[in-house]
Every structure is written in C-alpha cells, then in structure tokens.
Amino acid sequence: MILGEFSQLDAGDLSLVTRALTQLAKALWTTYSEPSSAAVDAHDPDEHWRREKHESAIDEVRASISSPNRPDDAGMMLTYYNPVIENAHAVGRALHAVEDPNLLAVVTEDVDREIDAVRRAVLGDMSGRAAQAATLTRAEASPTQVEEVHRALEVNPLGSRELFEVFEPAAAAVAAAEWLHAAARVVATDCAYESPRSVVIEADAIEAMPVETMTAIISALEAGEGAQTLVTRLLRETNAVARGSLDHPSDLLRTLNRVAEYAGDDLSQVRVRLCLLDPRRPAQDLLEDLIEGIRGCLLVFEDENVDVYEEEDSVEEIFLDLLRVEVRSHRPQA
Image 1 (cartoon, rainbow, N blue to C red):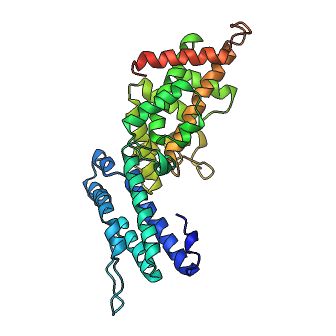
Image 2 (cartoon, rainbow, N blue to C red):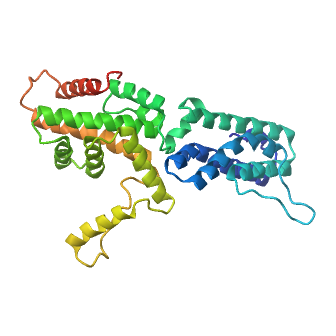
C-alpha cells in the first residue's frame, strides 16, 4: 500500500499504520495457506475449529477497523486470540491515532482489495493482486489450477517463468510430478532402463540433481499413489516440521537407524533432514526439484541418443514430443 500522498502526517504514526497493515495481511493470507479443510483431512477437530474461526473472521475486518477496541480509562483493553480480528483492531487503533478520514478511507479500500485477493486465490484465481499467493504454500491444490498448469507444461515441459510466478505452487507441483513420472517412463522405455527410478539416478550421475526428491516422487507414483495425494502429503508433513512438530516420528527413527549402520554410535557429525522439502518454502522447493528432474531425464535421453539421430534432428525436441505423447496417453484430457 502506498501512503506517499499522506507524507504530511507524522512519520511515526504512518509507520504504525504500515506495520499493523503488514500483520493484518499476514493473518489474512494464513487463512489461504492454512485452510480449515486441511485440518479436517488431518482429523484434527480442534485445529479445524480454530482455522474455521479465522476464516469467518474475515467478514468482521472492516467493522473492526472502523470501530477498534481501545484502552478504557483504567488502561484496560479487550483483545482477541483470533489474529485476523486482533490485527484488524490494531489497524483501526493506528488509524484512530492519526485521525485523518482520508487515510481511513484509503486504508479501508486497500484492505477490501486484499481480502478480495485472498478469496479469489482460494478459488484458484491467481490474477492481479491474488498472484502473491504464488509465494505461499497451500497444501490443497486447486483442481482448476492443476489443469491450467498441465496446459502450460504441454507448451513448455521444461518449465517457464509463468509456471513459478502465475500458478499456485502446490497445483504446479501436482502437474509437474506427473510430467516427471512420464519423462522417466519415456527414457526408461526408449533407452532400456530397468525402471523410471533408475533413470533419475542416472541423471544424477551426469549432473548433480535433487535425486532424493526425484526418487521419492517417482517411487511413490510407481507404487500407485496419486500425484495430488502425494504432493498434499509431502506439503503437510513439511508444514508440520515448520511449526515445530513431526507427524511421523517412526520415519525419523528408521532414518537414524540407517545412518547409525554407516556412522556407528557417534552421530555427532551427522546431519539428518527432518523432511524432504525446505520448510520455509516447501511447494516452491518441490516444484523447482520436479522441473529440474524433467531436465535430468532429458540429459539422460540426450546422452543415450547422441549418436542415434541424424544431425538435423533435435534430440531435445524428439524427447519433448515423446513426453507430450506419454502424458496425453495417461491424461486424455491434457
């Protein structure tokens, strides 16, 4: 939000307004990245109730800004545990200290636009201001967005700037996981590899790749887990680590036992990952690894076919055409 036209006001007061708006925006976008539906699927009724209250509180933001709670004569003030409502009141208190009706009108209009952006992002509309959702992780990918990403990958299977800046990252990861799986199948079939999983291991031998992510994704898809279910599971597990918990400690125990087999009893110099993805930006991290994995499959295809095709043929284009056909054969609607 631009407050330049109010430069005549006290800089300290404007700073308070800006900080309060920043906190309100964070609370609003948390309702997008941590929807109540995710808590239902995780069978956590208390968390579902809490998130549901945060979502419904969006309807109270305008009134809270217009009539905020303020300290009484004894210095006491009613505050809320709900971050959406409390931050809206904080914005209102900051504006009340300024006492400028024009500033109140501008801020209220801006908050309305932010709320509209959040609501549109929830529905899978990432246009305009809602595009900032591309920097967040929402584990539950929009089916509409997934289909749009498939169309974008049909045009450029190796990824594009649009893929990372326009689409919901979780939805992009769901589609990209299917394309990576298809890419590994293409190479395995064309170049007589034992399995799609062995293709990505070979890619890592050619050039450093996010092989741990690639093999985990392909192994799960080969075992029959759906891409949507797989991506949602990985993102939820990573989000739990980001909040300071571990959903499946038995997995960590198995990892530690494997490490101990090689490192012995002294684990002081060993580093163990608590989750596959970066907890600070899990969906974006996953998407980057998947697109890099598709490129890795191309590297293996090129390496195996360097002397097979005529010089005028583009090995990359041959691979991409085969990949498109493979995806279409498994997704007739693509």
